[in-house]
Image (tube, rainbow, N blue to C red; front, side, top):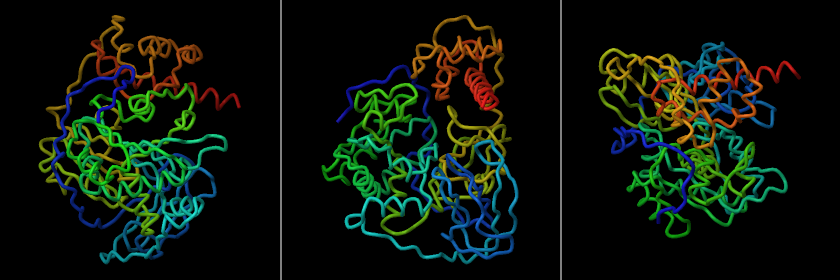
Amino acid sequence: MLSGFKFRGGIHPDYFKLTAGSRVRRADLPKEVILPLRQHVGAVCESLIEEGERVKVGQKIADSESPVSSPIHATISGTVAEISVRSTPTGERVRSIRIESDGRDRWLKGKGIDPEKSSREEILAKIRENGIVGLGGAAFPTHVKLNPPEGKRVDTVIINGAECEPYITADHRLMVEESRRIVRGAKIIAKVLGAERVIFAVEDNKPDAVERLRKATSGDFEVLALKTKYPQGDERHLIKAVLNREVPPGGLPFDVGVVVQNVGTAKAICDAVCDGIPLVERVVTVTGDVRKPGNLLVRIGTLFSNLIEQCGGPVGAVRKVISGGPMMGIAQSEDVPVIKGTNCILVFSERRVVEEEEMPCIRCGRCVDVCPMGLMPFMIRALVEKGKFDACSEYDIMSCDECGCCAYVCPAKIPLVQIIKRGKMALASAKEVGR
């Protein structure tokens, strides 16, 4: 079944799904992991352990009393070697725990519950206890997302399998290989929210994933094949494409009766609730200019450099390493660790990274045509560069989701996303000062 709705704007970039046919393989157990104490939207966790302490896989090593946060668990067994401030793939620097492996991979056994016989509160507690966050990249604490404010009724759950970034196939392979556990996780989500309808939304460039999900659901849920278009994976655009409902400016999906969860999150919920397994590993696509691109099941905290070497090392001199896809990913060092929200490590060599000269804006309007949020990126850019940050609010700068469509189509090669980010940061700083 194809969805008949469309969302505003969007683009059709070239796709390089090099690893779409590559089965997930388990990465080698790392000799050490680095676990930042914030791998989620919300408050930084406080360490529950000290240097020199021995830990097991699955042991909770950090937590927070904040309502919006998520605990961190040890992902290898071994010794806590260091607690210090380090860089993360998000670009921030936070306190992090470095654990050296003992090579024994000893687990602290968790215990699951029967979701059919458990209360909503018991299920949410299990999800929080096991550190589950959104695995599509946003890393919002799942127990918070599944507990909408009083008065906000959710009638539909959308399980997001769009995976619209040009290189990433981690979700694709998960849908093909773990469809039954994803469906089981979706049932748990529906129970917690009291939703009558569950829809799996997958772009039509993944026909094998659509087929596997249809078999796994046995007709209990809807599986929609969506026409491929970037950035359909953004939950607001997905809701429009699937249900023809529009999330209001400044609003959230539950304002229109919907909750969207990534397929990886649904699988992690099943693991946590049914088996008591905390979020200690995830599937990561390692691709681009590496000798053996693939999809790896990776212990969180493994260094990017380790995984690049496990994929045969780079082809040529590395010019850029990106966490995420080329459209919304963040370029960084190879020495940062995989965190809960890391779905892809993209390596570009010199041949693929071309410096292009920025030209004057010709006001062609292409950025306006493709903006999924209906913004005027060229106008926002002009205001930011003139330092008129207050005026940017009139052009709804904070609604920009930084998808990169505008920069992709700009004939003048203007780095519109970076400029808009600068404007958003200036506005946020001004508000902070004004408090």
